[in-house]
Length: 353
Image 1 (cartoon, rainbow, N blue to C red):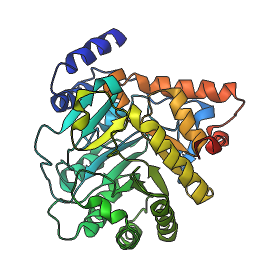
Image 2 (image 1 turned 180 degrees about the vertical axis):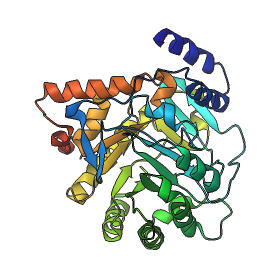
Image 3 (image 1 turned 90 degrees about the vertical axis):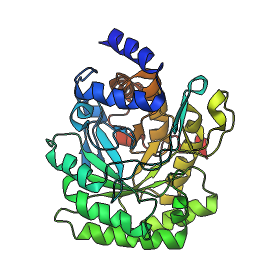
Image 4 (image 1 turned 30 degrees about the vertical axis):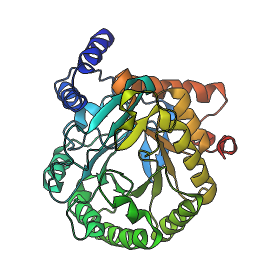
């Protein structure tokens, strides 16, 4: 299977990146990818905002936008999954091409613009899934043409919430014009009020996370923490893609959109550590950005993350990297004498401040 995966990755990299993305999902659904099952090791068990996880390695939003490959992804080694983003109405997103590989940098730039089939279709996919030990969350988005973008997040949660295990308010994508303005103190507070009201109306209120950008000032981070605590969100996901292009080598570095992958690791981890310091352990954090190895997952956890997410690294390493990251993390915890991943959270934060 590993040889087949290497050949598959080589073939996919000869194709347009967005077409390759679609074909990788088809391969998953057809059973043509490794499916060892979730990595279940006692040292990796952790509770995230009340959700028990077999391991803290999750899939970031953006890969399975329409929740079409939940079953095979649940068997790929992840401890939890996040699908979407979903918007109230279907939308095509931005014009193609809108996804670019930066191979020399082990990175990608995308400007998709919340392309998805809409909450009706995605909600149906979530409702039809077989529930198992791997929690599945939904990334909430807003339609580009909406006159009430803040209300869109609550609308998607109200419709899809009964079928998800958690939800994420995504106000940090750089690819919908003006969306990041919703991270401002006043607008964010109003948006989260609507979302949390919709949450309370669910028969089974679920954890709601807030996903933020890595390009925020120290003052903006402080405001976000205050608003998040006041709104009683379940945690913060740090971070989304960046607009920075510092240190890139690839020919596609000038493309507009959000940068993900290896170059984001340091920047996102510094934001994560600062959030850990600001929240004083009152909110669990999920570390995202540039995770491509067990060592980097461990760094995120030591910087303050209860769990981590990855996505872009799979473009270059394949989905078989997921159990490697999880089992490698277990070995690192054992090496350093931690009986549980939770005992390592935040132990290396000062190195990132």
